[in-house]
Length: 103
Image: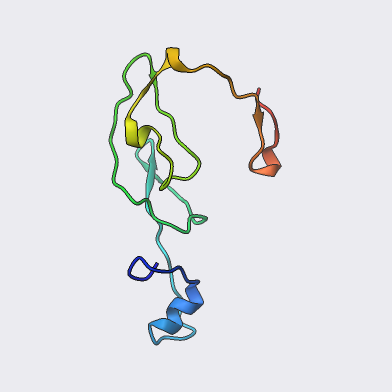
């Protein structure tokens, strides 16, 4: 994003900065797992919020949507009481290489 207005590829950004052909490294927002940064080179958008740490209370679940900046999930409304869950996931459909029944 440039001034929060539009996306551009690395090559276009180098051109915009007056350095055509210069290598550009984009560092996405960071997600930590067990204290280590998760490598997320596939993200095109940094998280639009700061969150955590958060300890999930006993008897609750921490739910995450599939679009981190537009999902109203536990980063927005905190934990979900386990008793309020009415379904069960049975199939993985993304990524396609992992498609199948959940074991």
